[in-house]
Amino acid sequence: MDRDPNSPATHADRERVTAGLREHLASGRLALSEYRACLDAVRRAGTVGELDAVSANLPGREDRDDAAGATPPRDYARHVDAPSRAGAYGPAKERRSRVSDATLNKVWLVVMSLGVLVWALVYFVK
Image 1 (tube, one colour):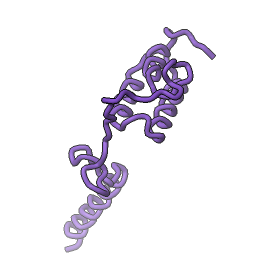
Image 2: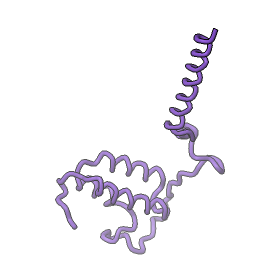
Image 3: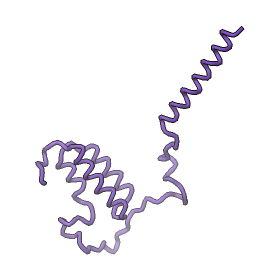
Image 4: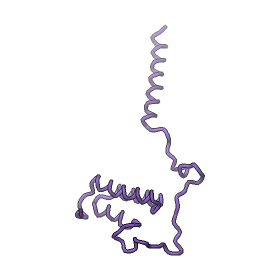
């Protein structure tokens, strides 16, 4: 179904484009850095036309002339986002905490509750 390129992008439209990007990433046709850049463009897109522009240049699309059986040029060097060492989750500056915010909030609540309990015991029990 072709929509007007100037119509506002819906959540379903963004999900459709994001699913296509995930498929390209999983098959190796898209580098991780390119995938992240495309996701940023999907988040910023306000219209269907902007979303279509994100997926227009993806490799392996049937509507592109050079898509089927195309070979890359000789001097083509595909950029690979590989971890710096085996088992790493990416560069150190991009590592995310393995503890979620909800877990941290629960720990904080338990510690504060224990503090109040100790204070109450010391204050009221003499």
